[in-house]
Image (cartoon, rainbow, N blue to C red):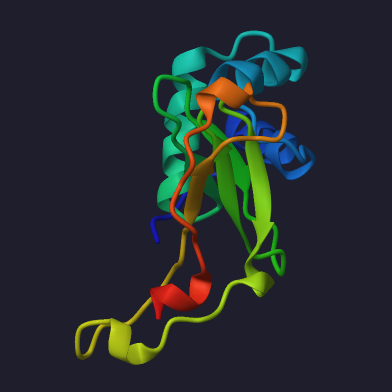
Length: 143
């Protein structure tokens, strides 16, 4: 973990993400930060987000063809994400409902330090014609 210097800009980004229960993109975060710090640049926000992601404070959520979203990692609220392939909406998935993988699933000696699972599919509001029937998914099949 690198040492992130706590500038006013970085603290503002952290506070905005900490109090946001959605998954905003950098432009939205920039707009919010500018309400408090009018002269902060979009580049500063991107560099701050990159540093916070490297340090594990936030999680970037990349969506094909759309802006990357960010999620503050609230202590004790382990979750993953489901991303709608039609509209790009991001939903939280409680990690408690997912079975753990046995150690045998990993190479000998491999130590897991972080888990990020992203589900891709269609939100309930997605147009029916966009949805192709996927193969049945059962978490037990992963083991």
